[in-house]
Length: 467
Image (tube, rainbow, N blue to C red; front, side, top):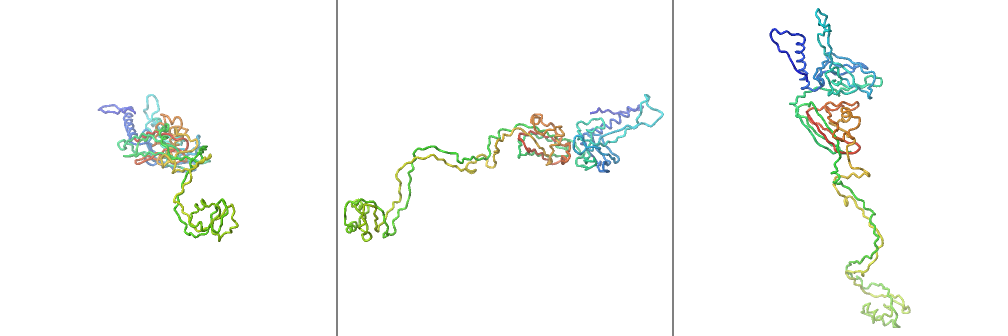
């Protein structure tokens, strides 16, 4: 900061040019220091940009303040021709900036001049300069020399067509001056970390209170993804179809029981037959056999006689009696026990397999509302590869890269180290041609969003300072 010194007066004091310049210099320095401390660089009033010809713009009268607190006062409308070629670095657009400039006005010829013969200047005329540049001004590099493009205030972006005529004028990028007194803004500092991955963006809400901030600085760096997340498994399934086969051939007990209800034939006079094998033990009179068996059970008949086939002789031909299958015809009934058990037996089991058809409801494990990442060959998340940053839903990634001078994405070795991006001034992000202008951070709520569209996820460390 400049050293401040001013005159003090006393009777009979002799004043010369040095003394008077000291007095005016004191007033100028104090005013500029106040401008620099109380207001941000930008347009105060006027300075609208319009197209006045195919290859010419005109800037209206107005006032702006630069980063050194100097007033950029344009008293009259000023035309300016566009460059006759597109930017050397590519693209179609230039930034139109206004910078501080002054010229010394020579003194009129007089009878008395400097004793050393040097040219005398009677006053200084402040006349700001308009320029086109392909680079966004960096106020951190603004110097006391003039004109200095890094001290410039952006008024508009002017795009050229293939014939180098004006295609469009975008005034949405222009910088405005606003109060920055620290007693108005509630200072805030945020520090934290967020795990980000493809499909898993994270957001940071912050609020500016008490007025417009003079600085909003963002620091970003990456770190390895925590292995803690892999200790809790998401919902998944196991397929078990046709995978269990046995070669066992040992005997297996297959005893079993059939339960029945005790029943009795409903019609005792039903005519039917049973085929019975009997051995003929001799010749008996068939005509006398029937009455002799009356009232006996079938088992006692076979055990006692067992010599012929039995039945009503009126229904059969006695000449057909032989040692062969015979049919028994008689009205009778069968009693069936209520439970019948098969005889004990065992059999050898051949080689076989069991098929298990299991679904999510049977075999699912882990958290029930999350499906585990199951892509074949998918590796665990490590560090951030390509980070996208949004401010109030506007992508500011390219603006950040331009401000910090990176050509690579927000990722890689430098990003995933303690160095990270360094400080990013969110109030002075350079615009990118063809993209929406970075939003202005004023009093109220704002949202930073961190997105990974491809590549690996990782841990994001951040610091945000509002001043």
